[in-house]
Amino acid sequence: MKSRHIVRERAMVRGAAGLILALLLAPLLALIPTGAAHAVDTLCLPGPEAACIAGTIRTEDGPLADVTLTVTDEAGTEQEVTTGETGKWNLQLDQEGPYVVKIDTDSLPDDVVVTEDEVTVKATFGATRPALFEVRTESYSAETSKFDELVQSTVNGIRLGLLLALASVGLSLIYGTTGLSNFAHAEQVTLGGLLGYFFVNQQGLSLVVGGVLVVIVCAFTGWFQDRVLWQPLRRRGLGLIQMMIVTIGLSLALQYVFQYAVGARTVRVEQANPEVSTFGPVTITNQSIVAMAISVVVLALVGYALLRTRVGRATRAVSDNPALAAASGIDTDRVIRLVWTVAMGLAGLSGLLYALVTNGIKWDSGMQILLLLFAAVTLGGLGTAFGALLGSLIIGLVVELSPVLGMPGDFKYATAMLILILLLLVRPQGLLGKPQRVG
Image (cartoon, rainbow, N blue to C red):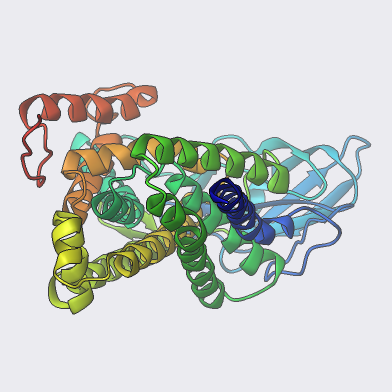
């Protein structure tokens, strides 16, 4: 009788795991190309038998309107296109292959010069290929001071740090309440970006509505994961090492499903070229400004909830001592499930903003930032949300500032890891972590 009960429990766990994968992956199946996509708010829409070439003609002083460009195919057939008030232009083509795009220099203002007046672009069905020209005024100087580079990289570092913080805060809370290092957390970041592409691009929803849906769907996947997988595994007494291996397997499975859904290409949440603002030596896209503002507001709300609300105090109590919290009447399972829900929602929001700021997301984007997330959590102190925020800002600044300070660009991630190792040699518990006795 007992053995039959155990077999039934194991069958329920396997069924729950399969249900989790189905829930996580079902929205992504709609990303698989099955025909013409829904129209988006652009003048040129690539499709199965349509390719697009697009670009923006602008100098350091702003966009240039009424600039004429000539697009020539291999057969010598020419087509003309003119830039609009924002300097943007695009052209839809019905054949793949190389096209020569040339600027009519006579249509440029007298004080504007172009380094190369023609470029070759390979058009591909289903994609928009950029034609990039370096256009400057005659008084422009390409030389920038070291101070200007430092300021620009600092802003870029803060932007990266805020996006990492959205994901790492949830990762740190999960570790604090359960002791589990979730290696599949970065895949929730990828899921957020891909769902943003699905809702905004393929379904034609506005960015605001699509973003809200992304957070809701990702948060629900977190609730569902804990309800049907992690809570049963905890109650069965599964060790943290075994559960960590489960997260690694879930991470690999999701990566391959992402690749199957969208291929190796980079998908963009918004097809239009982002608007750029300049503040002294800093040049930044408006999307980056909005993403940073949203990150600050959301992180402030999370911090307020942890410090000032009843649920936040219960979360900190479970993180400090789960057994004592349970003995005090706190429903630890409900707190842990709430943490999973909020953490996955924050990771989804991070992925959406990351896709907007970096102009796209790929199937392996989460894997590329996984080490940065763990570095931020470890640097700030394992299990502390505010430590994860501080560690994320430091990692973001180190990654962006290291090339300016002389480190080769390919080694900027290694620089962050080196600083992490050096700090842990001096302070093993991290910046805001509490020292713990071992043994």
